[in-house]
Length: 412
View 1 (cartoon, rainbow, N blue to C red):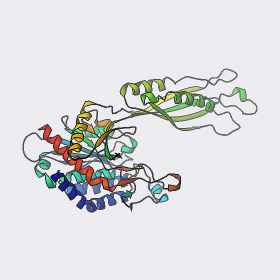
View 2 (cartoon, rainbow, N blue to C red):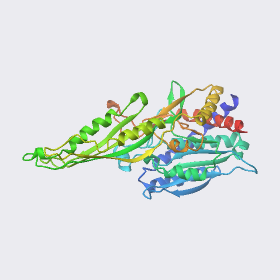
View 3 (cartoon, helix red, strand yellow):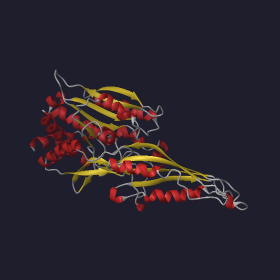
View 4 (tube, one colour):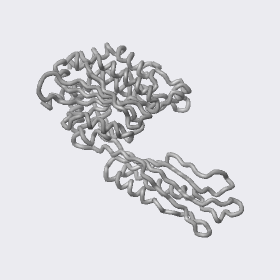
């Protein structure tokens, strides 16, 4: 307890220094489609961690409109096999620069909160990674030197691209001890929430081909694609099953041209989310089974044609033994530090969805905060911007430090 108080005091004493770099990070617009901004943030990040001895490698995204992934490494000192620990964050955010300007969404300190794009998702997580490593180097230099550290930063996490996961797989050995994801970790009833599972996601495009007709003279000869889409949307909505935590969301719809013409086309995009692989696969099958199912037929027998296309899918991160083993370490450490943790299963995805397929993975290791992906502020109508809770940073970093020490000692 005495040593943990020293560590936390050290981190708290340097908090202004850490926050100054976080402020510089937040000042860089790193919207996924702003490749130049993402790359500038990568350069700032690499320069910061270079002070801890990390070497940088930039890897182009498979989509050349996006920025470069960043991998930082610090090999263990001395001969022999050394444990490999990966820490994971991302460089991109969801806010275009014009949106930040329109909503005056910039670095703003209010009491215990700091508002700004990426303050908790996930530039604050990157800052916490640095705090953890700085604390280990300062108080446990032999442990710090003995670990093969790999820091992985996705340039396009908010777009759910899968090339970053493959790049990690190419660089992380199969015996990697842990992949620790520094997405924000919320606080509930004074407990740090650690993410142990996440829903998977599939997206679909639904297209309807109808038949045009004059809406006044030949209405009966038309096959209304929008009306057919309405029937299909009702079928999609009925696939949601909250008892299985399976949801379908029709995200956008468009169709038709003018009101005096029976519309000949309609389109929609849909996303599906759920936690387990079996439910995920069943949901995909039921969605694709709507392909070709028609309800709207013209007077002379022309039936609307419904087409359902699977656009992409990201597998769920279900509860599993490897994650549970890591969670047990953090839970044991929290108890020793007179803190508390609790499991959280999230509906949103992270890089953990990919990495858990190959490595023991734990998520939610970043600081607490709220309103991720929100740039608007209208307190009278319940809108507020993304913020990080500054008071969570030193305690959470302390918990992560001592849990890592426990994990490394247990691994021998």
